Image (cartoon, rainbow, N blue to C red; front, side, top):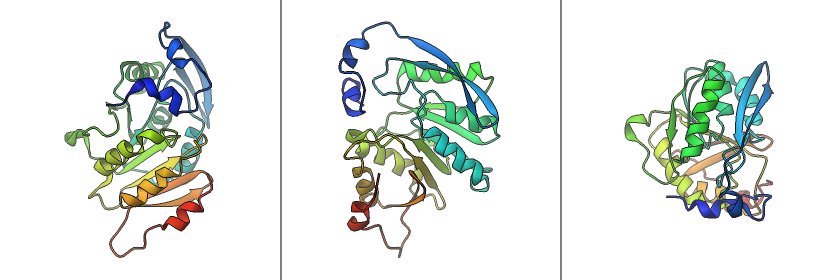
Length: 231
């Protein structure tokens, strides 16, 4: 289980007294956000130890890539990790994609995701899941994992690898689409752990990566190539 009290320190929070703020009453704000030809109404909440109350900037990198390469995602079962407000899953569902959202098993995050579904008259499944815990086997039927700005959570990369292996091991053709805009100084460790856990990665656009399980007789990414990654 995550130690939520440490999250604000690990994610470049702009607040020096985040733990004090979390004792106050939660504050919400609804915004209308233009995403391509859709206008989504999103409720954000201000106090979150996991930063899950806000719309993350690389969400829009993911959307752009999926729309440009929609043939890769059509008729696939997609799960979003670290869905936060749900804006990415909301948009994809409106566009007809088969998407399920997932984020830390924490009450405020789960309730806000459902609230935003109701605001936009959209319905999709949401799976509360904390990285590193056992993913429900009866729900583990996904072809594609998507995630935005998750490389902030350096202290939890090992737990993230456990979740990714549960979702992607023994699934030929499965892949992850990951994008980021915010990062920490040691976010490269994410790629080191990918290699150690038999994943391969390829940058397909600026700050956007496709990650797959390594196949037999293929050359893994070397430490040198990890060192040369520019984040």
